[in-house]
Amino acid sequence: MSISETSHKEKLVIVGGGFAGLNLVKHIDKKKFEVVLVDRNNFHSFPPLFYQIASGGLDPGNISFPFRREVRRVAKESATYHMGDVHTIDVLRKEVRTQFETIEYDKLVIAAGTTNNFFNNPDLIKSVFTMKSAAEATRCRNEILDRLERASLCVDDPEQRRRLLSFVVVGGGPTGVEIAGAIGEMKRYILPREYPNIPREDLQIILLEGTDRLLGPMSPESSAEAHQYLEKLMVDVRLNHLLKSYEDNVITLNDDTRIYSEMVIWTAGVTGEQFVWENTDYRPGRGNRFPVDRQNRVLGLEDVFAIGDISLMTCPDYPKGHPQLAQVAIQQAKLLAKQLNAGTWDKEFNYVDKGSMATVGRDLAVADLKHMHLKGWIAWMAWMFVHLISLLGMRNKLTVLINWSWSYFTYSTSLRMLLHSTKYPLRRRWGEI
Image (cartoon, rainbow, N blue to C red; front, side, top):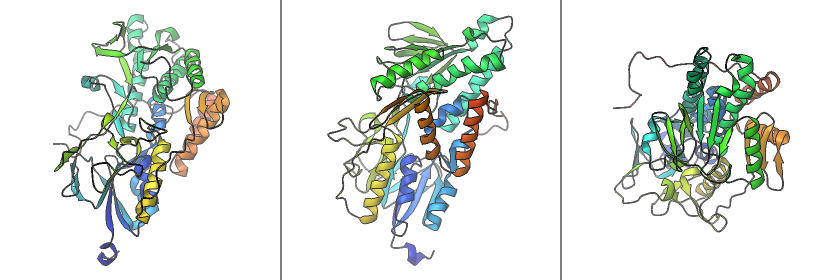
């Protein structure tokens, strides 16, 4: 493409390649905009299935898709991908800076999503396991499998075996319910088959939730059913319990109850990704999210937009902001692309709620759809169908379908491989100082 063909285009920089950012790349007019997508990873992942990586049900490659392949498919030479972690935004110079480069923009779209929220207890990041990325989920999987293997060797030391298999999940939202259920399935189905010398009762799974029910955003029916399903999988659910501290493998709760756990999985909350702002006194709002108008324009900044989980749009139907769900991000991206393409801002964003789902285990799921509530096997089938069609790439769809089918009929999987990273050669992450 010649310089004359690109000189009239505005440069649109998109920070984050999740559901929001990638859908914006797909729908933006490449004849009008030169698009630059920036993300710390060189692939798009499917966060709703991170728990399956953590439990050994799927491989990270099954739910990931390279940005360069997708950008080439939808945009050819009109869009590019840049690997980098955006840390600074200069609104006066209209620049974003990563550890590798400085990128100028005419219009900036922040779609960086969220990260873990430790609720004023930042030291937890050093001791708990999280699942906000494929890498974090893989680390979680390795730890679970490592503990199972070591516990199987503790033939003459049942106390050590119980310590190794003391799991606590913090947070009763969809991710917490799903990973607790996945470990519960391992306890119910996998231990007798593959670890026969580990008594079931030695593997303890406790799910802590600070409110009075699980799956808070979903219906009371879904909450109660998910609770029953978890108990069926031998998960100890404890409601109205908040983690106050975690030191020396001991959890202290808000009522001063103490729980011993050598592996704590944190799914309790999220907060927006943080940036350093230059040449402005602007700061994000509640939850480190960006307050936006009904067209996703960041209030108080010019030519800056925010979509997806990191945006905070209030309206009569959602006075506290829209739920941080994939469908919200996708719909916001499509509307923003349409309005940027047309150069008009006459249409307000109105979220079309297509429903919420959560799976607890094999044949155990709940779904709140627009006009109906589903549970059990039918909800589980609906959950599988929706997640399959949402994956990028036909290869990924087929691979996941085969893995799920094999696991369903055999109660087993070929993916429970323990892959520890090697220690040498020693080096920092790319771009770290």
